[in-house]
Structures are given as structure tokens and as C-alpha cells.
Image 1 (tube, rainbow, N blue to C red):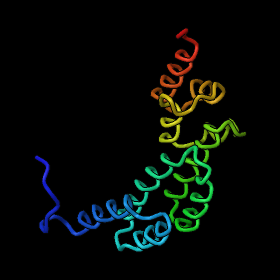
Image 2 (tube, rainbow, N blue to C red):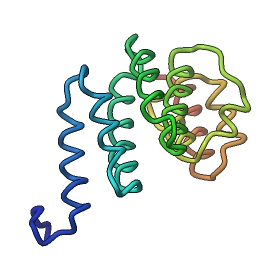
Image 3 (cartoon, helix red, strand yellow):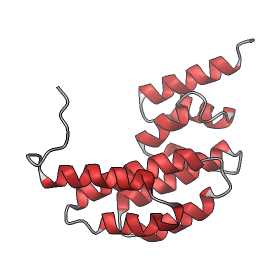
Length: 159
């Protein structure tokens, strides 16, 4: 049974839920300040998790938008001392590069995290045959290799 957030829950659970809600509704002009405030929370793991979810949501929504670059630069400054968040934002930027057909290297793709490779091999995300072939051949997990192979086969099927 799902329960509502109550005073009986640990304080970090209540703060996490509050942060997620605040990050989801923050105005763009206030986003960097709110992210910085969340990252100052005493529970660094919880704060990183909340900001990580926010970065994933915002990056996905902005992926092909021109304003992605300015947003990513701003977020890079705010999260600079958080390794996981910095890597995640870097991988969103790499995903954008591939999606937009800009230059990337095989090493960038092959050395990316499992999360990135799963995202890149997911249906309708990356359409680059070169990227999909590389993931089909050198993807870190069987799941990624199979997903990339399915994408490649689907591309070659007549409609």
C-alpha cells in the first residue's frame, strides 16, 4: 500500500519529496539557485539523487532545443564538485551531440556508462546507424548490444 508523506517518515524522505516537487515547478530564472540550494543539503546522497532526477527530466525535455547548451553550461557551474552529476550531464551532452548528427568519437560512446548506452540504444532516441552499429558491436552489456541490433534491423525493414 502506498502511503502519503507523513511526519513519521524520515526527514530526508520528506526533504527529497519536497525538493523533487520544487525542482519540477521552478522557473528557469530560479533553477540554478534552487539546484545549488538542494546540493547544500546535509545529506549529499539524497541531494545528488534529487538533482540527478531533475537533470534527467530537464535534459530529456531540452535535448534537441537550442537552449540546451546554455542550460547545460549553467548547470555545469552549479554541479562542478559533484562527480556523478557532472558525468550524467556530460553524457546528456554527448547524447545530444549524437542525436543532432554532430561529430562524436567511437571512444566517447564505448567508454560511456551503462546508463548512457541503454539510453542511446533505446527506441527513437539515437537514429545514427554508426552509433547503433558501434553499440551493437561494442556495447558493454548484452542488453545494449541486443537493443542496438533491434534498432538496426528495424531501420532496414520496409514500412
